[in-house]
Length: 406
Image (tube, rainbow, N blue to C red; front, side, top):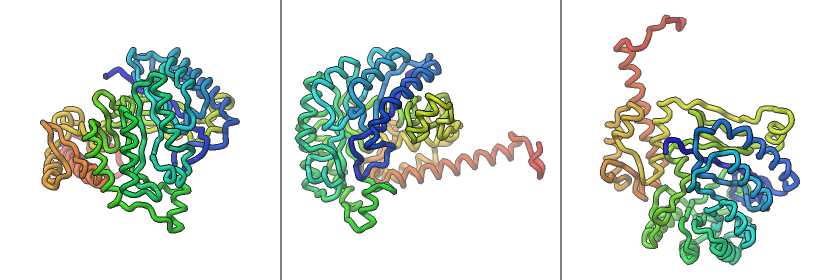
């Protein structure tokens, strides 16, 4: 696993923009697809030599709505990836899709080109809830799309669901979960609705529209965890559940701090000891790659070991794999005792549990995870400061005068 790499391709085009979406995606810009494709293909060719020592074992084509991008372009991208990168024999290739933008013919051709995992935005089985956030499909189209995926022999299917949608009730949420289970996906992602600043949904809420509150969302979440466990789906991350052997390999790279390269406007990477991203602007991205050579890099940060220790806590405590004392001490040379004491407090409150030597949150703890992880990171910061002061007192750092000279 140490020499494997994830690859993400961002396709920022959509048929329409959903009211809750704050991802970088564009509706009504199909006229720029061809030039974006040229830029993305060139970016793939320029980047691949930097990863020649790594084996790519996951490819994720996300968006936007990649299946709105068109069969020809997708096949061309897959061919370029295979040509330029070294792919593992069991590479996981995921394609995001909306139910209204796939059919049997398309999925058969994509499957033959290597796509073996489909992630579909079902979101709800209630058509009125889909309309309420301007989703471009019906539940009948979701059912037809799943049938087409199975007909194309795609054996790894994820369905996304959202709890907390406008007009949603406990009953309609449960009906959506049951409808998803009838479709027998290998993986389910169940997200709580978040009102993001600047979205049409945020404007609606500002005008007084009511959404299910935090307590209602919490009840739906806890019921979902229990119901999916009964149906044979193991929770392995805050919002993600899978049948045995069907965890998302690509998303695990994010949560386990494994290297990945993102290509395309607004894509993010963690590669070569750095985190970096590209500009969220297709026009600037196209110009920068194809014509002017202007800067397409948006942000770039070298991640020191100390910050990796923070990521270890922040990301792995989102998963049921969790964290382990000696793994932490070995990798980051830091004292785990204060964190262990705090986790023991959480255990008393039913928020955390220790399985063997590993700690992770319970479903109730996941509901509070932002706050609890923040508390753990504060303890880590205090421990880091204490270690620094101890080294100074022990003469391990050179002394400086008032002007900072050693």
